[in-house]
Image 1 (cartoon, rainbow, N blue to C red):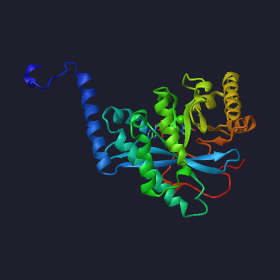
Image 2 (cartoon, rainbow, N blue to C red):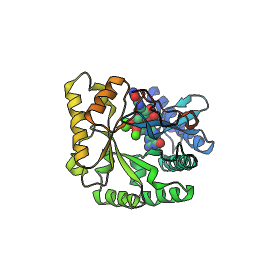
Image 3 (cartoon, protein in one colour):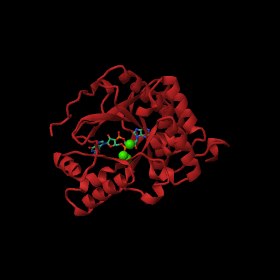
Image 4 (tube, rainbow, N blue to C red):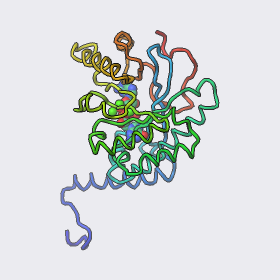
Length: 279
Ligand code: C2E
Ligand code: CA
Ligand code: CA
Ligand code: CA
């Protein structure tokens, strides 16, 4: 180890060293990706109970020069650790706002909302809310069409701080969805303190709801409770017509999943007032 010099050291476990090298190269690659515009936003349709598109969720992709198209699960955590999530998050917000502006000029698309995923680190930044407002103002996007998706664990932090950020953004028209709902631990009575507009039911419940009565009971009670609290509900991961039928019966107002469309580049989205899939 000493031979490597005073300020460097080596692991003698080759597997561990290989993993370290790989993560170091991912970090270097990510920095280059930001500079070289290799990041892309794909958009997945969000539809109403009848299957008509009401908006889209922006999902990050990385067009890597050697690896091809990389999904966010493979690099978001790394970006957080490397301290790059602030920059990436700003880029995502900026690009999503530009998409809203591009859609605003056409009667077929001007009503569409865009949902943006926010990472925990990004949300914890003290000036997060001001930054979002700055990006909205600079782009000229309509804040009322922007939805930010947060997860439960992010909201369990300093509750006054969380409420402060959310309230400031809400006062300018931005709305909030609670992502992956049902997978966390918080009670709805806790969540009631937060200015949330919408719950997104995690796709694991949607996946199980036709096979296990338990899962469909959970979905039904989430929808009922959400409505009693004045919240909208979107079910994620809708892949079959049977799931759609059952969700519609339960009264779930929003749907998202492969049945209606995968995430695609914005120019590949199909617009219009017809349902994306015939009912
Ligand atoms: P998420 O927010 O829960 O997004 C939904 C994920 O489920 C997406 O995966 C989407 O492609 C996938 N999905 C949608 N419909 C279906 C379906 O019917 N069946 C199945 N099996 N999967 C479906 P994706 O794009 O790989 O994103 C994974 C996660 O990465 C997202 O989960 C989100 O947490 C995170 N993410 C994506 N974009 C961003 C971003 O811009 N910033 C941050 N911080 N995180 C992001
Ligand atoms: Ca999401
Ligand atoms: Ca989700
Ligand atoms: Ca998720």
